[in-house]
Image 1 (cartoon, rainbow, N blue to C red):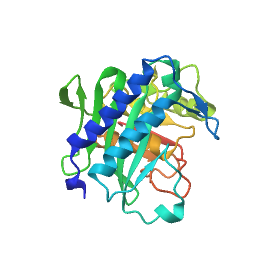
Image 2 (spheres, one colour):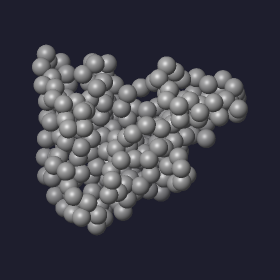
Image 3 (tube, rainbow, N blue to C red):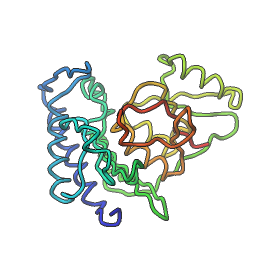
Image 4 (tube, helix red, strand yellow):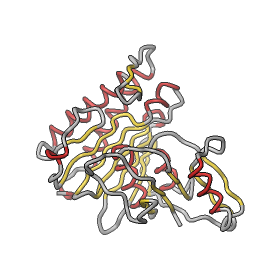
Length: 260
């Protein structure tokens, strides 16, 4: 199945979704609603979802789709899926509303609970990240039309760059950072919204991303593939094993993305 997926088609779908988002981003009407879980929803979320679902159904009608913005699918109906698309059409809706540009389009292909292909588009920067698991485990980004391979980088010397907000560390994250200070006395902080945090580790801009706060499967699927194919690990903070997908409860456990 993986060999049948055309990466150019997937990248095009993600970029078209990004263009649909930017149309609304550059307007004065976001159409903000509040969902049952108190998270925001905009016209851009819906527009991007329509583009992605239409594109995936056209090119890969045999593969089911689980999207944050699509109708919720009961576990009994999806538990036996071998392959499925996992989609967050607009990751970082709060960042979109703040207009800081740190929002992404996430599309991942899941096989038996493991993400094996991922594309993340950053619309405001004309940048797309892509990875497909295979013999070469290659991850790359396309920036303004220029394609380049990316790779994660381990900390150098006594300095470790951590994806986290210096001013908004929760207790669990603060404890993790304090532990790292025993090995790396100089901790530098980098912050970013949405799945960009995975991309920053994947391209060597950060060495670690501890996520000790709630996320959903569609927030992490594409980022996990890109980070792993770039040489990083994405592990459950408790079990030390890679994150699994298509669980009955789609909430992720705490996890750590690391280039160590």
